[in-house]
Amino acid sequence: MIGSFLVVAAIVSFYFENFAKFQMFEEVFERVIGSASAFRAGVFEHYQNSKDINFSEKIRKSKSLTTFFTYSDGFLKRYKEEIEEHIKKGGSIKFYFIADNAPIIEMMKKSGWNQESISANYAYLKNFANEHDQNENVQVIFCDAVPRYSAVVFDHEMYIIEQTNSKGQRAVPAMKIDGGGYLAEFYRDDLKRLEG
Image (cartoon, rainbow, N blue to C red):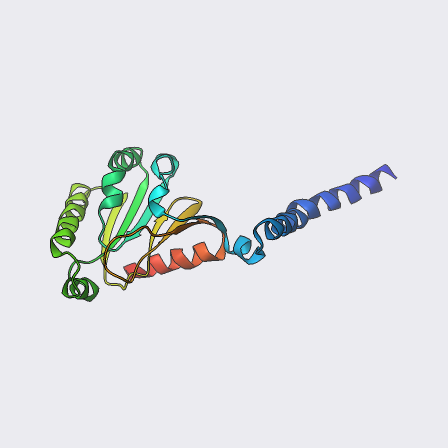
């Protein structure tokens, strides 16, 4: 009798830990947020202005850091101290940028984007790449692509930052994504393909 009870209790416990708990969280999320699909996709939070996000602690605590920006040096400048600390601790870094001779950059210049600003950004990025050229844990990859988003990726989560199609700077929204959701898998694969 006791043995049967223990077996049933173990099966119920196993089912709850592996299936029911996830379903329960999904149902709660759906009632609170209104969409279980966002939960399955891995969307955690949304920010009206991406500049409100402070990545300092995440850079310090994460073992890996990957970013994609068109040509902006803002992230490297804003978090210079944290990035250097991350590198000294042996953390891996992979920074993707559009190559300065890529057709999309030439098109942006012809369309009226500030050429001096673009050149100054690339000078900073290339200087950073040269400084860390001998460190096998640091990769700065210049690629040819049409940028549709910016990204900051840590061990278990990522932030996708929107980009504008129109000229000029303005506040842009961002979303925080769980590293295990299908959106994260899509963005990771998309970034990886930039190397090919």
